[in-house]
Image 1 (cartoon, helix red, strand yellow):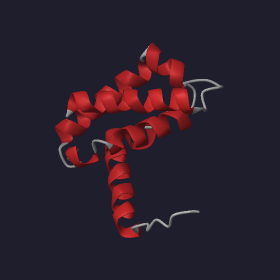
Image 2 (image 1 turned 180 degrees about the vertical axis):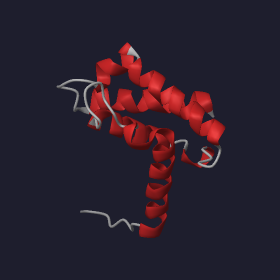
Image 3 (image 1 turned 30 degrees about the vertical axis):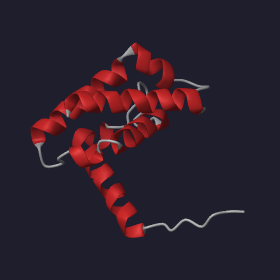
Image 4 (image 1 turned 45 degrees about the vertical axis):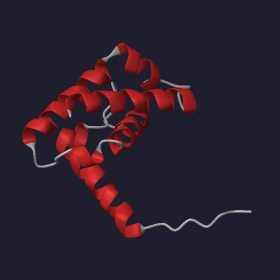
Length: 112
């Protein structure tokens, strides 16, 4: 039997708006870029989901903090250990996804 779960649209809309406001300020239209593309779904997943644990600790109006986050994620994107789980085919399953998210969470935590 399924359990009914109430979905708070207003609360989730605030989370969504906050997430993408922060990510837009971190990297404008290049925030989800991959090595050969302007949008890489694996990087999109890592940044969006990796940010959630820290969402309430990020000040979207603090340009110094946003700059540090931008640098941290740009640095992570270029690390070989991240690229191994984020760039290329065959990475669309739980193991690499969880690793991408964890790496993003850790990079963000170091800045905060």
